Image 1 (tube, rainbow, N blue to C red):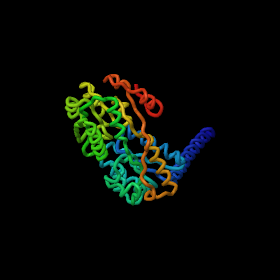
Image 2: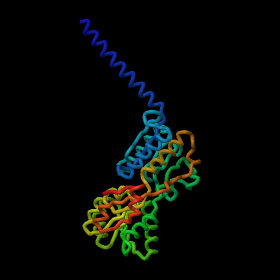
Image 3: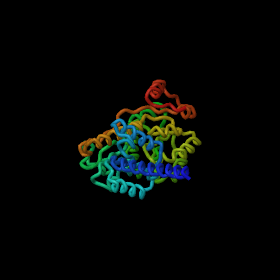
Image 4: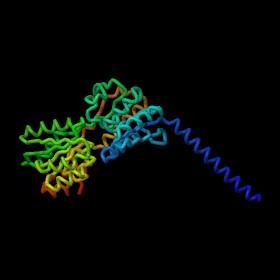
Length: 330
């Protein structure tokens, strides 16, 4: 009987210790500043930004569970989720919030005009009404602008396809970032005597039919920074491959999926810069005093398998550069 009492006593002690430990852990977490991260949806490019954000925070000395509490929310491309998740951050008094994509940042800005907000790669923060200017944002928002080197991307296509005459561009006309890049790309190519045909979609459901039609009318395809097309890139590539039409993307994930090549800004690097800016705010900086920044150095991303499929020769200098600073997919 005495042994039974001893065992019961030990079990009770274990339960008490566990409860106390849990309470202490909860109390410890409640004292850590909350960093809310709101991501539009799961996608390789956006996931790379998220991964970079965590690394950037760490570079500034902030680690989840150690001295900050990260509340990560993924809206899975649902506008109602964006709104409710942004409100959640406001209700839990997040010290700083980070929005990955324009839609995520807009949801955060609509939820609070006081909580510091850091943009994770927004292409047109002024045009979308998020900030008043890049140098002086004038509100509680700052962060990283996604500036793709469209001129270098256009130059790369001309280098790899010197005889191309007609290029198709597929994009979501409701995406401000994509629209801006398309206009620039079209202007650059037409100055070189190349015809650019544009094809618009409204959702991933449109990609199959629109891309099949496009592939029958052009010699090559360029895809700007467009989350909708990126989400359905395999459908696009299925149709272009069948028509023997090469695709040139604007971001790394498109090349990994099977597009031929690009010269692009690293999504991960943009995330790192975003995280570092959030860390600086945690240390006391005000968003209104922090100019919007952007990653300036791009890299080559080459898919040699796709290049061989279309008999495209990649110059050795570009391959060497991709091997050194970018990525070569085989």
